Image: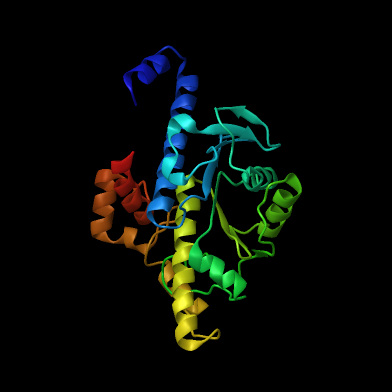
Length: 271
């Protein structure tokens, strides 16, 4: 945090200063997430990450630009009715994806929309993404919904239709277009997108090698592994082991999922 920002916080009461600091951190998460998606090759000129302003029907959203160019000082604030409340520049044309998901799902705190190549190819091949590895296994355990349109989501009606297709799921595929993931945090929504594309890539290779009905990891083995490693919000059995207990007592529970922690450190050099 820069000195001027610190001084401005000092002139506020504690609750207001905390709110501003939380918003600053949220903006930084959006910037970090945008650069992670770009570095991963999932988002080049297209794609966007947003986060709900906690406890409101407004959200922080990037302007119309590549995720590689997103910075804290060019982020916008919109509401769920599509009104731009602050920030310079125009929002990305598909802001209705985010606006209508936030309106339909009060539990959602972050949304990611990008055009991941393997995920997109499999939608056109009508290939269900099944579990092929640990990363994202629970995300693809059950069939993901598909919004069966390739068009851009540039109006309220299509945004509402996409949100309806998403339903209570964490992700929705978009036929010949891309995918949208949601989360309780920016970290969760972005990690889900990275895991989704990784699973899709593994599915693509298996499809090429063994056909559409290729083998995949069954539910019983997904369940078997569920207690042997942690996730962002539910840590697994390893934290009951003595050496893990000692580490947690000393330093506290890990703040970040391994995927987010790794990529955020890499992209921090660019910011």
